Length: 200
Image 1 (spheres, rainbow, N blue to C red):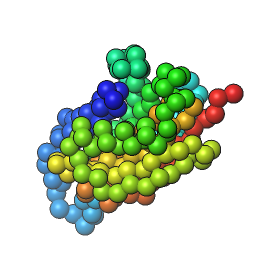
Image 2 (spheres, rainbow, N blue to C red):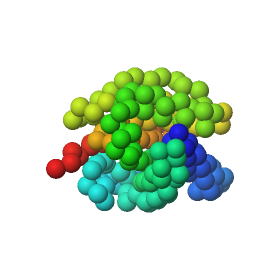
Image 3 (cartoon, rainbow, N blue to C red):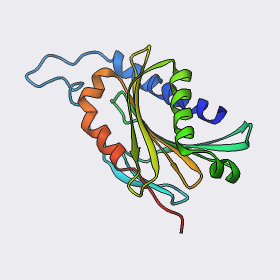
């Protein structure tokens, strides 16, 4: 599905972007009794973010950048919405993305088939190997899947996907092996904070 192929490229480009490279090349600070700052990255201020349409909330480390892209698919034109935060001095990107399905497609397609397709496309387009996966549900009962995978460059993505009310949500954290160890609890807290807000 074209709409799902685009997202991993956006996410991978972020973590490979200039700010991370610049940070990696900064000269080391003079030796002191304190531990190097790279061991304990500066913690950004986390705050609750509510989607512009009010249909999801999540804790994010700053105000996300929003990007909307229209994509033509076999189902017709679909908009992919992404919300991205990449904290300074951390090799990590926090991303929430979603796309709405045409009503007929969302009604007749099994949610697990959509989740499996999203997983397969993420692995294929990023040329990644699956580390682990499990079935999950949102706090209000929508079907989901959690996957973790690693690409050839060593970038690790932990993603939770949900199908809810005609929409596919993808909540991701992309980081390096080194930062994953430091940020493991933070990433889990971020993923746990995601909530689908039901239509009224």
